[in-house]
Length: 358
View (cartoon, rainbow, N blue to C red):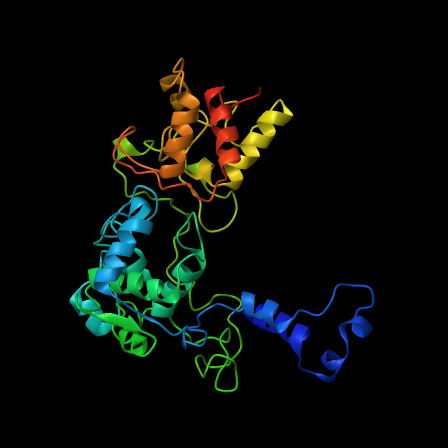
């Protein structure tokens, strides 16, 4: 849990003498004190020292079945897919498991940095799967299912054998085999020492706010690279428009600027604005552009394909709800069970009418 979260919870539930006062006395007319149940609902993270780890167990075989049901549509059967997200598995070796340092991160011999190449702590994987996956139904997996899915991923990376059952009792043994476990330094003041709240990890010194330890042998100019060959750079549209315009992760410009009617353009009617907002809120625009393909087809392509088809509305609603693949190529579309039937009706109607001002 972040230091900010801990401070917030401390203010809410207990602590110093001022915190012992009634909420109404400390902040008259502002809110109320959070109940223990409300705090517990937020306090679900799993730390590197395994504080917060729930009890449970799951084996590789069960994880494979769960993976194919909930995860493979975006990540590939073997965690190798590069169509929707960066591959999870690949680029690590048995030597990396022995040393705790991923050699390909240094040599650049692997074409892309996968999750298992970068993440140093197995708790990070458990925590993220538990809180954020599946993409369309986060927090829907129980602890046993999370253990099983994680066991399957670890087996793909040869961290655990095929007959392994991962549990809260043996996950610390797995940490000792993580390929990049020694690839992250805690030798800075951002992590407190023995008297701190992370079980003695870190040195408790002065934070390196100037990034002296990191900023060595840096390039003078930032180069945004891509693992795609030149001829495929614009296969998913303009990547620069699909990333935040701020922060360290920027998209490489790979196509023409968005045309009028693309996501972000000002709609000309309230109906179109509501439908566009709904498409963004439900995650549709992560895979579909209005006027071009991203991962899935552009809405203009869908409208053209089904133009004049009497049952187009019902057909597309059913396809979106159930998911599937093959109509637009090999890239699958996950089931959109998180979208209500009336919302699907609205979105499909908007798409078939041109996904623009109505």
